[in-house]
Amino acid sequence: MNVNPEIKLDIFTVLADPTRRLILDALSEQQKSVNELTKIVQINQSGVSRHLRILQKIGLVTYIKEKQNHVYTLQSEPLVELDQWLEKYRKQWDLRFKKLEEHLKQQKGKNDVQR
Amino acid sequence: MSKDKKIFLRHTFNATPEELWDAWTDPNQFSKWFNPAPGYDLIVHEYDVREGGRIKFDMPQPNGDSNPQEGVFHVIKPYSEIVSGSPDKSFLIRITFEKTGNKTKMSVEVTGVPPEYHAGAIQGWNAGFNKLEKFLTIS
Image 1 (cartoon, rainbow over the protein chains, first blue to last red):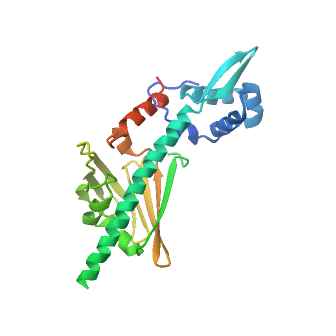
Image 2 (cartoon, rainbow over the protein chains, first blue to last red):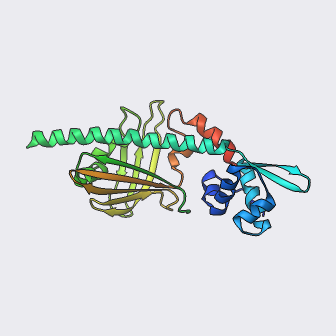
């Protein structure tokens, strides 16, 4: 597959694909060869290789050559980063919820005074 | 736009759906709480609450960044649903209100990568985000 270097692959796009998530799930148990992965995800080998190349580009997998096989291993670092990113984003909303709660309380106070 | 890239948040408020609706749709109220930076309000420039109406505000940060934000309202269903985001819908925030007894459950569904994080304007965010970009960019 030709990956257009102009297009930024972000982790959200990469993880949005169900086949790629299946591959990552399989690799989270233990390292696997392309053949083993092909059996698990049940698409042809060139399809699996294409997904693996994308996963490798974004740093989610690495491979070593063992005899004739490429054996792939999961790299969790980008996932940890994503997790921290989401955590920060959630915290922003938690802060908003707190401010909104406080604001609603003040609004109620105002309305009571008006009555 | 993939349906998988979503973040869900939920919070139950001690308020009616009408009170929450006003807090979202009255720019004077909205400006008081939407900026997550404690002690900082929004500076609202445009807030045209109708489908297709424009949104434009600054979300000032403690480090002095004005953090300008722009968007459009896509869906306005009084007291039940607000969808806003980028005009091309690559980034969307869907808010829904559901009455539960005396309280109201507010759900937030975020689709796409929030533009404020591309700008990296939130204090303390830059370092983490730059690191992430390194991982996520095909060179």
